[in-house]
Length: 321
Image (cartoon, rainbow, N blue to C red; front, side, top):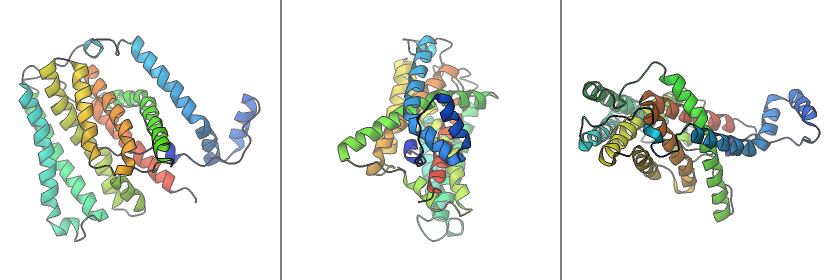
């Protein structure tokens, strides 16, 4: 599952320090500040920096040909022809059901999850073990399928972590701009600041950050959820749409819309502004998948996003009041 959070709401409080003067004078003042205060000063201009970075990313993608018609298949399109679209969709459905059935079965074993429904132990064990079960089912299916569809993007390469990290860094300014835009719209509509944390599971992680059991829940969110969701939405849904339409852009857009709609039900109403960044993140992962034809790339991107979100939330919660 995605873990939407408004990163800008985790910004450190800026100290009442003058920020005027020449560039060199401001740099010297930053050097003399405590780390937290220096980061707060940087955070004051971060929105402008993010917008400039996002513009740079768009220009780079345009020059690289990614945004042109046929740009996603310019290098080498994923070949999903060996299997019909229902088969691709079947992969996603099986992984989704495997996770749901495993979670339901695990919840019925008190010796594993405890007696309190919704407790930290209950959620951590249920989410972690169901992700292991669903991930195992999905990866097993890929092993069987990739022999017949070697160019469908079912393999995980040794360089995927580096490529995925690079793609995430490239996508991050766009995700941040979407987040900031959604926050601004929320403030305009409700005349109030949006909640800093927009997901119940993330809130539970922050509330129990001093409990060692929370690290099992963190592992489920940061590692388990990305593997399962990318198997469902990238391998299953995106490939099925690609098979039907023959359009990589159509496949990316369709899978991202469904990815966002799925999160509608797990994000509380007051936090649904964060779905904007979830949609942009999914677009980025879908584009990276089509361009690289490596499943590990969107998985790593997803892991990076969830890890960053959890880290920001826990760091923000540790701020002094």
